[in-house]
Amino acid sequence: MSEERSLNFIEEIVEDDLKSGKNNGRIHTRFPPEPNGYLHIGHAKSICLNFGLAKRYNGQTNLRFDDTNPVTEDTEYVESIKADVRWLGFEWANELYASDYFDILYAFALNLIKQGLAYVDDSTPEEIAAQKGTPTEPGIANQYRSRTIEENVQLFEDMKAGKYPDGAKVLRAKVDMASPNMHMRDPIMYRIKHAHHHRTGDKWCIYPMYDFAHGQSDAIEEITHSICTLEFIPHRPLYEWFIDKLEIFPSKQYEFARLNLTYTVMSKRKLLQLVNEGHVEDWDDPRMPTISGLRRRGYTPASVREFCERIGVAKRENLIDVGLLEFCIREDLNKTAWRRMAVLDPIKLVITNYPAGQTETLHGENNPEAEGGEGGRDIPFSSELYIEREDFMEVAPKKFFRLAPGLMVRLKHAYIVKCEDFIKDADGNVTEVHCTYIPESKSGQDTSGINVKGTIHWVSVPHAKTADVRLYDRLFKSENPAAEEGDFKDDLNPNSLQVISAFVEPDLATAIQGKGYQFIRKGYFTLDKLSTDDKLVFNRTVTLKDAWAKEVKKG
Image (tube, rainbow, N blue to C red; front, top):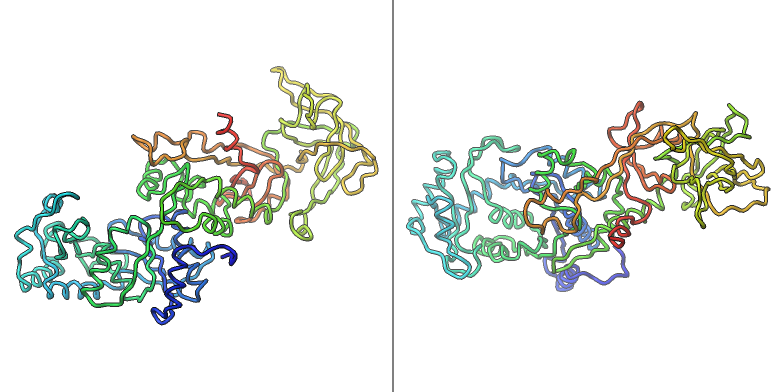
């Protein structure tokens, strides 16, 4: 974190706590994902905040899996979450699970029952919802609220023993049915679920609700700063009520604004829908806002951390422009990506005065932005090259500094060439551009005295490798698809993926997975996990410039 910037409000709280000696000057945070899906960019903000605080103030962060719902959870998600946190550059002090505390939480529940602060309710979910009242009308206590302590203890033990089917009974906290806060109107603490748990197997058939498990888990771990998103503000009084009545470690909850990003959705339920209905390839589809999707697309941990730093920590919800995320990855890849040449829409260029069949080896730096260029690679050059179709025009307008009859251009890392002629097919499409080259104009050794304004990239025809290149765009057409009426999937961008066959320079046959490459003049790309020796596959991470913003402005 940058030391020059001002503190965010949570850092101010932490610094005040440290100055006052609260918690013996100790900072302990936690990141508590539910293992029911893959993490997304919104979780990255929470990860960076929790782990970043601990790092800044010499504290610790626990990774705690909130695995209290056995029906939706899976070890696949546990492993993916751990991989994502590590990829972002963080390591947790302790790997823990809410299920580690099932015995303790059960004892806590019995404690509350014995204090007369919890009771077993036989009502249906519909009856409970109706009895809770409305935000303007108090709830109504039912007959089960007056059960004796002894009866509640016995019923709760019978629930644990598996004597009742799913939904037959619940355990509720006895708080205040007239509270203006609906969460305080005797919330459910436990429900019956005869389901196999990914860690505890079939030991339990009752499971704690989030509001009961979360604060108590924080207290057990002696978390000093429990940081949640704004929707948990109404839950905070209940968080504190449970801790107070149980007389356990007084963890404190603080809330910040969650991340909302343009042109995507952040709801795990909606993301799951996109996967299950086949709108995307999988959770790690490069169009998804998941961390695994960003990684596969070619985003770097540094760019995601920088993005989270730039958006800051706020108390009010707002919509962040995805263009800022793209700016952060462009800025990072400009410094780290290796430059390579790839032709995405090819036509052939023939150098008529270059010896046919001859190959010359040229040299190109890996990254001219880096000191020393980070080494380089050999680039084969021949009389037949592929160039981009857009780099030739039959009739060139003013200020067109590429190829047209009579015009000259420099071939990147190579020579200046002059367009002499071109060939068309029967349909009138240009298939070949014929040029002559200036032997004295070789890059780095140019003695020709000729100055040209344009430089274009190319790939030698006999040495070119073919590759599937995936051009990704925004997943949705509108800025805020989550706010649209109707089915959010109606707003999916039909042009979010275009797959083309391209020619790339031979060095890309040994491209490294996870490494960023700038295809000169075309954008930033990375090798996809499905790429093989026989079939190269590259994903476009981001364009060189923000073409989308230009389109929006034009429209």
